[in-house]
Amino acid sequence: MSPVAVAFVGYAVAFAGTLGTSLLAEVALVSLSPGEEPERVLGSLAALLAGGFASSVTLLAVALIATRPPRGRRLRLAGGPAHGRAVPVMALGVLALGQALDSLALVLGLESGSALETIRRALAGASPAMLGLAVGGIGVLAGFCEEVFFRGFMQTRLRERWPPARAVLAAALCFGVLHLDRVHSTLAFFLGLYLGWVAERSGSTVAAVACHVVNNTVSIVLAGLLGGVIGFWANLLLLGVATAVFLGVLARIRALVPGPAGGVGGCSGFG
Image 1 (tube, rainbow, N blue to C red):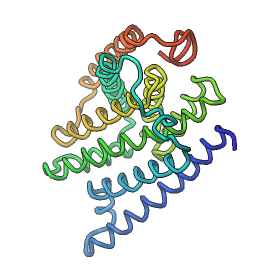
Image 2: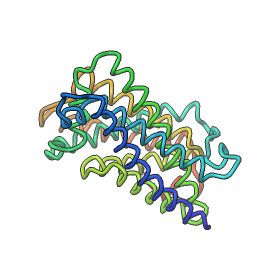
Image 3: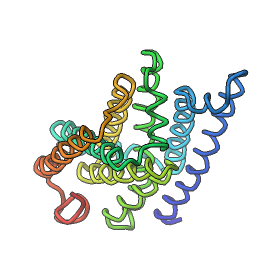
Image 4: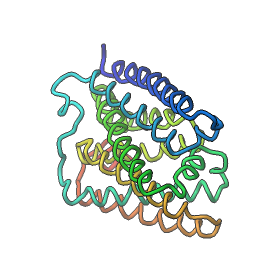
């Protein structure tokens, strides 16, 4: 089977597996909560954690099973060039991009009724213990497993036959589709483009993992403690500032980690 076929067959298996395991986790949670309305249970932080854990473990399992040894090297889990200097800058970039996308969705009035609103509502006012579980389960575990699958497994396999930019685009699109929500999927797609570019620029999945974990963790903590920034003008201002910071970060990364003379990591790629 060609590397491209392996990537997409793996994605199909992972897609079906995450749906199945997440559904089983939610059914189990509802059955363990007698007397409570199913809608309330499914909108809770506990349901978010159960579904996130199930889907994360499924993605990681598929990536490991579908990758021949040595898995660490074939999933690009070794450090790439200039990690010490570049990873903090890359992490700042994903935070700026995430904030810009969140603020844009709020300015356009798209977040109402979306999965993002449900997630923020579940996190708002969470106890310190539950917030800690969310950081561990969604911030760290989901960030690690999703990057190992989409950038470590899928994007790497696609790169064996496709140009880097095409591989980044395809992996980001599949990453977005997995979120199964119009707004959340769109935001995930653009984050996936950046994370894919980071993986190619650094030559390693590790940088993308670090960025994803930082983005998820900061988002969870801010949503749990502050509930998010509200108001049209506040988000419009944040959109402008975050966009400027993101563009500056792209320029700084290009200076810190010179890429090849073309493709997604070089002058003719993304960013």
